[in-house]
Each structure stands twice: as structure tokens, then as C-alpha cells.
Length: 415
Image 1 (cartoon, rainbow, N blue to C red):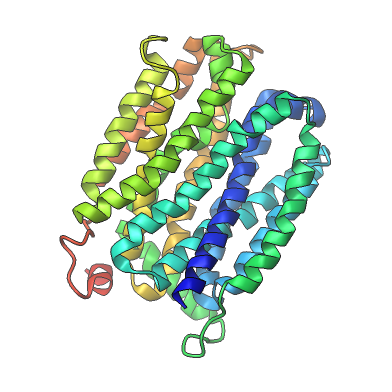
Image 2: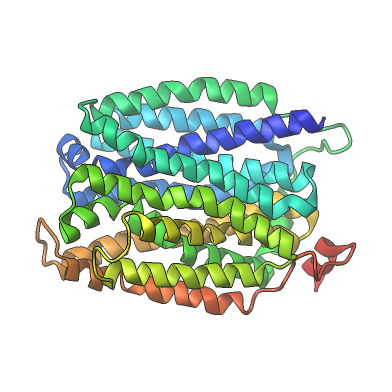
């Protein structure tokens, strides 16, 4: 049984890699997308951002679906939805492309929540933060590949629509394999979906202020990655620092590559120390320093890739609240709790993504090419956001093994 669960978790994590590569890929093909869809770079940023407008609310759907019907019933459907979304996006039609990008977000959310559900319900609690961090490692490997690998592919002459068509086709066998590999619910846990029970679960998780704190902390630490790097990172390095496209792609991709290191490393450190809060706060402080240096520091002082890599490692702490949120809520609400934190987390990205894009247009007075000062003024509020995340961490309840009793989840959830 343990081997089957591990295989199911690995395949679900692979699904997360797949959807994350498509989440980040548009950053390296903005000029091609602008030409194909007939939109400005800011318009394309809004189109890309539709992913998060679906990802955030469907987090709630995915979370309660895990608790009500189990991952086998919904995770494969999510993978198929992402595949269809990629196929629609490849058409280059603004309407179909918008629907496709929305579907990518709606289906993609089932990857992370499904993998976390498997960790929370079938794997040892003593390794929870490590395994959740490893799950995010797969996602950020996809995020890195979406820039580090896709950028050179597009630069070599492969058309953008061929890429999206290929990704859509690749998603269909993933959906089929997920259906056959994820175990069904056992007779002891099988029950008919109950809307009232689902609403009670939502109410319990939302009424717990610790759940909202977890979502806010994760979102504020995550925004520099989802907005600054994955949408504007390549353009920032090209326009503000004059780097060639190929170099800008590689440096921007170093941020999600840092997540590949930071997510499992910081999760392991948290489990090893038996503490959650010091690891979150310490990593967020490091992120604050590196983000400030990326915006205001002198160029050429540090070796190439250093700031981006360290920022990625530090921002991996955003995944630790995903472990905390299940530890401060009842075990039977683990899927709903993960959905709620994901909803709060990516609602911040969905809301602030267009606001930062509009701010950049306003600050640059609509210029086609922006200056370093334009980017500094536009993205300075991200520093405030990370500082706020550090402050909110002080209010978070410590749930590490050093403070937990034998009935941790129930005690914390009712305290």
C-alpha cells in the first residue's frame, strides 16, 4: 500500500510539474504572444493572469472535493482540463485563448491540492513539511523548465503555438495514468457527498484565523515569484539592465530553480527543528534582502544568478504554511484547509497582478520600453508585502513537533 501511495504522490507531483511549466512559460514568449493575440505586453500580462483568477476560486472547489469524493475522482479530471486549456490557448484566438488560460488555472489547482491531500492523509506526519516541500519542488522544477528550457526552444525557432499544442497533447496520457494509479477510497471512508458537511468544513476552516494567516503569509512571500519573476522578470532584465534575451531568460529561471532547492530544504529544516515560525520568518527576511538588492542594488557586484537563486531558495518558505494550515485544523478538513490557503494565497496574485501592470503603465507613462526607475517605483510595494509577511508570522501559532502533543491537530483546531 505504501508503495502505491508513493507512486500516486509522485505522479500527482509530476502533474504539478506539467501545469507549472505552462504557468511560467508565457514569460519567455511575450513578444510572440503579443503579435499572435494582437495585444500589448500589458494586455498579455492580463491574459496570463487569468490563470490565477481561476486557480484561486477553484482551490476551494478542489479542497472540498478531496474531502468529499477523494482525489481519484477529481485529480485526473483536473489534468484533462489543463490539457484542453493548452489546446485552446494554442489557437491564438483572444477569446479561445482566454478560456484556455482560465481552464489551465481551474484544472491545475487539483495537482498541488491532490498531492498535499495524499501527503496529509497517507504519509507520516513527522515528514509532512518535508514532503509538502518536495511536492512544491516538482512544481518549481516545472516553473524553471517553463523558462529555462522553453526560452531556448522558442529562441531556436520553434513556434509558440507548436509548444502549446504539444503540451496539450502531452496532458491527456497524464490524466489517464492518474486515474489508474491514484487509489480509490476504502470502504471505511467512502460516503456520499454531503453539501451541508462541506459547508460546515468551509465554515470551520474560514472561522479559524490561523487559516487566513497561513494564506496571507504564503501569498505575500509568493507574490515576488508569481508576479515579478514569472510575468515581468525577463522584461525587467532586458529593459532595466540591458541583458540579451537568452541571458535574461536564464537569470529569471534561476528563481524557480531556487525553489527546487528551497522548498524541500526549508521543509526538512522545519521538521528537523520541530519549529515552523523561525524558518518562515528567517527565510522571509532573506527574501526581503535579496528582493531589495534585485531592485536597488548595484549591478555586477555579485556573481550572475546569485540574487535570483537565493531569492528562490528563500521564497520556498511559502510552502511551510501549507503544512501549518492542516495542523491547525481538524484532520477531516485537510483537503478543505489546503483549498482555503491556496484560495487566499492566489487571490492575492490574481488581485495584485493587474494592479502592478497598471501601475507600471502609469509610472512609465505608457512607454514601450521601461527604465530601471520605472520598475523600482512599480515593484517597491512588494518589499512592504514581504515585511508584512514577517510581522504576520509572529502571530502564527507554532505547530512544530517541539510543541505538539499526541492529539495535535484536534487540540490546535479547537483552541
